[in-house]
Image (cartoon, rainbow, N blue to C red; front, side):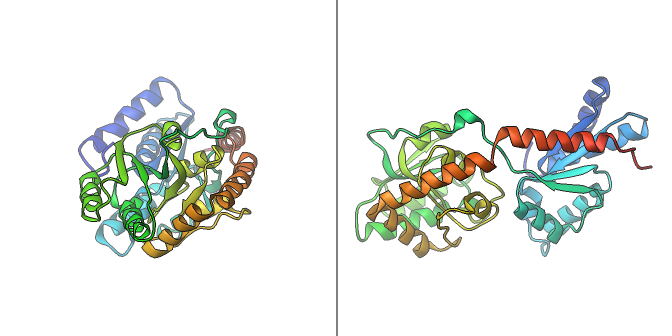
Length: 312
C-alpha cells in the first residue's frame, strides 16, 4: 500500500470482499488506516448480504499522526469517524494509541481494548556483539519522523569532547538528506549508513540502541531490543513509556539534541549502568509483552463479538 490515497484504494476493498466471501470469513481485521478501511468497507457490504462477519481495526499511528488542525488531518479524522460506525471492535497496541484516537477521532461506539504487541520466547536472548561493533546503533526507516537528524547532531556534539561511532541500519525517503547532513557535520568516518539490515544482525553492530523518534506508537524495535538485553536510549514519545514502565530506563525529550547527547555521553562514560537497566527491562518485557498473551486476548475479543448479534 502507498501512504497516499490512490486508485488502488478503490479496488482493494472489492478484492478483500471477494476473498472474504469466497472463504466465508468470520473475522476481518484491518491494520493501519488503509487496512482498517479495506476490512470495514468489505465487511459492511457482506453483512448487508447476510454473511456472518465482524470487522476489527487496529490503528498504527498513520492517519492519527496528522494534526486535526490541518486540512489533511481533518479529512483523515472525518474518514475515521465515518468508518467507526462500520466497526465491531478496535484493538489498540498501546494506551497512547487509544488516547490519541479518542482525542482526534472521538469516543468510539464499538468496544475498544488495549492489547500490547507480543514477543516469541525465542526472541529473548543476550545479544552477542561483533568485534567491530560501534558505540551506538539506529534501526528503522530513514525519514524525518524517526529523528535521525537529531541523532546525527547529537553525535556531532559528542565528537567535540570524545570519539564516537554509530551504525545506522535502514532505508527510506530521507536517506540522502541524512547522508548529506552527516557529511556536513564531518561525521563521515564516524557514522556508517548500512542500508537495510535485519534487526537481529543490526543489534550486534552497536553497544547501545538509540531511538530518537519524534513520534511512535508502540515500536517493535524497542521491544526486540529489550528482549535482546541491548542497552537503550529512547525518546519519551508514544507508547515507549509503557514499554519501560517500572524500570529505571530513563527517556529523553524528543527534538532535543543536547538532552540526547548527554544521555549518550552518560552511556559512554558508564555503560555498566545501562547494561543493568537493560537486564531489568528484559525481565519486565518478558512478563508483559508475550505472543501467547497477545493471541489469547485477541482471540477472546473475536469470539466475544461473534457471539453478539449483528446490529441492524
